[in-house]
Amino acid sequence: MKINYTTKNQRLNVEINSDSVKDAFKELAIFQEVFDEDSCQLCHNEELQFVVRTVDRNDFYELKCKKCFAKLAYGQHKSGGSLFPKRKNSEGNYDNNQGWHKWNGGNENV
Ligand SMILES: [Zn+2]
Picture (cartoon, rainbow, N blue to C red):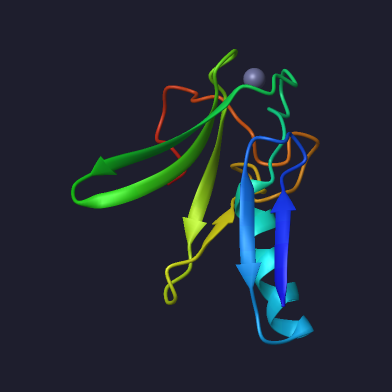
């Protein structure tokens, strides 16, 4: 089974080859969770940039808004090399910003 999927903002396209519906579902879920962010949730700008920062030999994966410079940080699963967007705010709660935040000058929530 071959699936072509284009993100909501039409910027990325992925081809998924899978043996079963379950595999296709899983692959799509992983891709959507990481790559299908269509706009900054603070200013709704659609110009986003993928950024990887390396600090002390650790890589930090972020999506950055090119307009207001807010960012969405990604966490890394301990195994499998996959990523997930950090949707909770610094207090550990979900809010309307869906994880998008501006650096507040303090310790970044890495
Ligand atoms: Zn923004």
